[in-house]
Structures are given as C-alpha cells and as structure tokens.
Amino acid sequence: MVSRVLGQEPLTGQLLSHYRIAEQIGEGGMGQIYFARDEHLARDVAIKVFPPGILVDETTRKRFRQEALTLSQLNHPNIATSLRLRHTRGRGFLSYGVHTRSDPQRKTPSWAAA
Image (tube, rainbow, N blue to C red):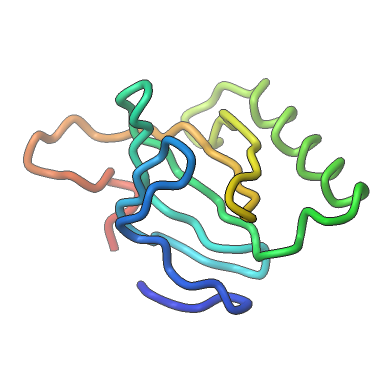
C-alpha cells in the first residue's frame, strides 16, 4: 500500500527519530500508519504519522496527548498501547506497541499482512 494522504510522501525506508520505517500498513484522514523498528530498544512498533501542520494548534495537541495518555494506560491484546507522542523534523507521530506472531520467517507482524 503506497499513497499520498494529504500531500504526505511515504516514509518507507526512512528513519523517523529512532524508528526505522519498514512499510506502510494503513492510512486515513489523520495520517498514515507504518510498521517500524525501534532501533533503541530493538522492538517492533506501529507509527501513526500525522499530516503536516496538524499539531500546530494547542487544542489539537491536547487531544492527541490525551489519546496517547489513555492508550498508554490500557493493556489488552486487541488495543494498541501508546508508547510515545513525538514531533520531529516537522512531523508529529504517535508510536504504538505491537503484538507479533513468533515466526522467524515473517518480518512483518501477522496483523500487518494483507
């Protein structure tokens, strides 16, 4: 899946903060979702990258901080756990923990397979 949501170029292969972007797995009105690797902690994550300029006003930043806080306090296999809300290189993003299937042949987690 490759697209350009609200003028965003795909980030596949790039480094966003300390997350290596592996592949785009979804998209919507609030941005693009990527499967990535946290290079500091050697773990798989999902990254929601917001459209450019969406975190400009304080109301929107507060809403996303609240979403991140709420998700960080939940622990259930069917709910993504929020790990970090960041803004770097002009892009706002939210990272989530992922539950992956133990399969050494599969690089993409089972939830990201089409």
